[in-house]
Amino acid sequence: MRQNWPERLWIVRHGESAGNVARDAAQAAGLARIDLAQRDADVPLSARGEQQAEALGHWFAAQPPEARPEVLLTSPYRRARQTAAQLRRAGALLGEAPDLAPDERLREKEFGILDRLTFAGIRELEPEQAEFRRLLGKFYHRPPGGESWCDVILRLRSALDTISLHHGGQRVLIVCHQVIVLCFRYLLEQLDEEQLLAIDRAEQVANCSVTEYRFDPALGRMRLERFNFTAPLREEQAPVTTAPDANVAAR
Image 1: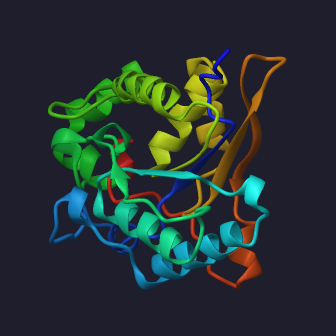
Image 2: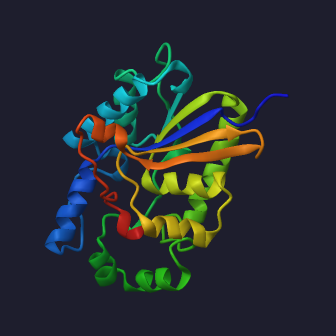
């Protein structure tokens, strides 16, 4: 019988972006808004993000053939596509490097009217939304024009169905975003709201960190092997950064 799940699945957050850097500057200065010239989809990697992606690509390239990705999927956002392209250039994939396969379902959570606001900015400029978020919790709160975590999970269910249909039994590498990494954990490990938010509270998903799953025939589904794995960066003395994206206040 055909195996529907991938044999291995690596979920990687993109490298550090200009948005990460701009957010840190805005928070440090106590500003309400994050200073970015581009829309979120067009925010590029920082120089450190490029270094991180190259280091991770080298780590994948050094693995034995049976432990290297065969398929590379990516969010269409620029920082994710740049990370994926750098991984491919560094030799991360086994065999001929295929074209990148952007999938809009892997994009970052959309933040609507809270886009580019810091925590202080939300409290100052959108106090009603700050109160709605407090009452509903981040899992269910949907800012006007944006998404809740549940909305993200709904589109990822569809993405997983497509991955199972087209890449069952293969080794798949996904490049995406912090919230997407966590929502994949919710789906693949059959978590509930509190379990997911406990993981989110415990640690930030590092840039270019690896979350890895392997198919377990006994379970009949994917088993978590490691989460937020950053040793490949440290091995090449690349910086390890955990700054949330520019929109994290609305996350």
